[in-house]
Image (cartoon, rainbow, N blue to C red):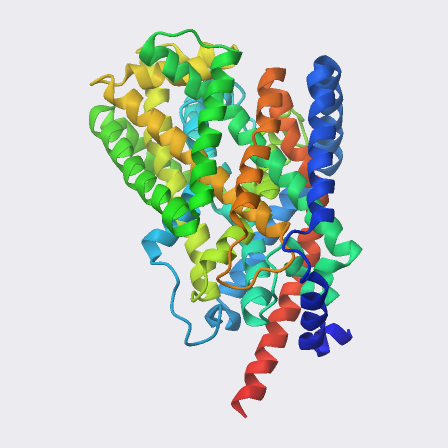
Length: 525
C-alpha cells in the first residue's frame, strides 16, 4: 500500500489530476443518466414497473433480509467499541481544533437532515399497521398489540437506525480530518484499505456511484411519502381538491425552498432552517401533549421505553421463523434498508459539520440524541393518534389500512383543537423538514461529484442547485405510480450494494484509527 505509506504523494497526484475542473463530470454524467434511465420507464410502464420492483423486493427481503438485521447489530457493536474505547477521545481535526458548530446547532442540522418529513408522515399512522399485524406472535388488536404498536415505531427510528447512520459518519470523518484527504465522498471511507487516491480509480467511482443512486432512492422515498400528506393537509385547510396536480405543486414548492436553502449554503440556509424547525417541532409536540390525552401519552410512552429496553435484543434478532407472517420483511428490514440508503448521505453531511468533535461525541450524540428526538415524536404524536382510534374520537385505522394514509394524517391534525393553528404548524414543519433533508442531500451529492473539496470548502452553488432540481424527479415518478409498495421497494433495492461497502469501510476505519494512533505516537516522541 504505497499510497498509505506516502499519503502526500497520492494527494499531490489527485490534486494535479483535478485542477482542470471542479466537477467530476464522469460521475456526474453517469449518475444523471442512470436516474433518468430508471424514472422514464417507470413513468411509461407503470404497472410493469410496480410488478418488477415488487418481485425484486420480495427476493431481496427473503434471501438477504437477515444480512440487513445483522448489519444493524454490527453497526451498533462497532460504534460502542469505538465510542467507549481508546479511540473515543480522538478529536476530528486535531486535539486543539474547536467545534465548528454549537451542540444545539449541530443537533438541529443532524436531526432535521436525518429524519426529514418522514417522521411527520409515519408518527401519526405507523401504530395502525402494528396494531393490525402485530410483531412477536402477539394477537391482533390485543392489549399487548397496543403496547407493541406504541413501541415498535420508537425501535425502528431508534438506536439501531441511528447506529446505521453513525458508522459511515465516523468512517468518512476520520480520514477526511485526520489524514486531510481533499475530497468528501463515500469512497473517502475506504482510504484505509485502498489508498488516498481511491476516488480517482474505478473502484472508488463505483462506490460513489452506488451511493448517489441509493441517496436518490432514499430521499425519493421520503418525499414520495410526505408530499401527498402535505397536499391532503392543504386540501383540508383551504378546501381545495387534492390529487396528482396538488402533489406535484407541493413537490415543486418544496424543491424551490430547498434549492434556495442549498444555494445560500450551510450557515445561511441549512443551519438556519434547522434551528427554526427544531424550535417549531418542540412547540408542536408540547402543544399536542398539553391538549391531547396527556396521561395516556405519558403512561404509554413510559411503558414503551421499558419494553424497548427489555426486548431490544429480541427485536433486533427476531426473524419470525415459525410463522413467516411478513412483519420482519415489511417493516424491520424495510427500515434498515431505508436507513442504509440514507446512511452515506448522513455520513458525509455529519462529517462536514463535526469538525472539532471527538468520535465519542459524534457517536453518542447521533445515537443518543437522535433516538431521543424520534422517541418524543412517536410517544406524543403516535400515542395521541392511537388514543383517538381506541376511544372512537376519529376512525383513523380504517383509513390507514385502506390506503388513505395521507387523508388519515390530515384528519388527525385537523382533529386537534384550536384550528387552524395545528394544521398551519404541521404544514410549515413538513415543508421545512423536507427542505432541510433535501438541501443537505443536494449539498452532499454535489460534494460527491466534486473532484476536490478540502475541509471548510463548499461545492459550487450551481452544482448544489442542480442536484436540488434533480432530486425531485424520482419522487414525482413514485407519486405518479401511486403505490406505497413501489415507494418502499425503491430504497431496499438501491441499498443492497451498500451492505458490502459497509463491511469494507468498517475494516478501513479500524486501520485508519490505528494509523492515526501511530502518527500521534511518532509526533509525541
